[in-house]
Length: 276
Image (cartoon, rainbow, N blue to C red; front, side, top):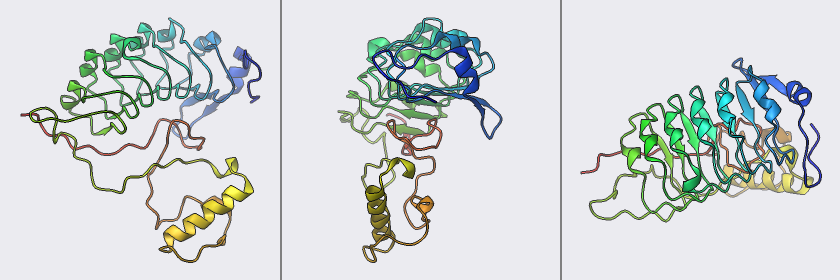
């Protein structure tokens, strides 16, 4: 797929979009148009009523069409790393949506519609790396929600509805100015102990030869307790597969170019306790 060039980016036609559709291992039709310099949401995509998953991540899209809700076949929508400042109300019509990634945009709390609470099938929602300090109260109706990413925002307190959603088991509130006072949310978040670290995965094909060698040497030091550096044997395909290393299945971050689906991102388990 050609990369976008110039201010207008890549023009996506219906023909190009149809050719980009691929079947996923679980039998879904996935359309991937990421990292193409797209500046305007291609309205022709709304004609593809058989697409189950749409990936428009790592583009330059500033606005979604008001009739995005007509894309009723969608089960997964990935718009991370664009320039979105708001989401249209019609997104609430995507009642079959199970995974929604809006991380690394320019979203403000005023730009999130109350209709987000209509996404009754939603299991995974990533709103990390935006400019949010509150969420629509209607999201209390998201009873199917299991994973919520709110990292790198401006939250000073945990959204109240989080304690009510019984299926919500994973929340990422890292790097927010959250404070828990007596009688407030103190003790509500009880993270499992593990070393603090920032992890960014990239596919080995994105690394130059020098960086690839350094990564392999670093991996050897980690897995051998600090000894035995060097380039190591084997091919580059085992870079992130050593079983002795700490691993995070499906680990993703918004700006990652890893090949794993963006539906899954790194998130930590959170233990919920009722507020007294």
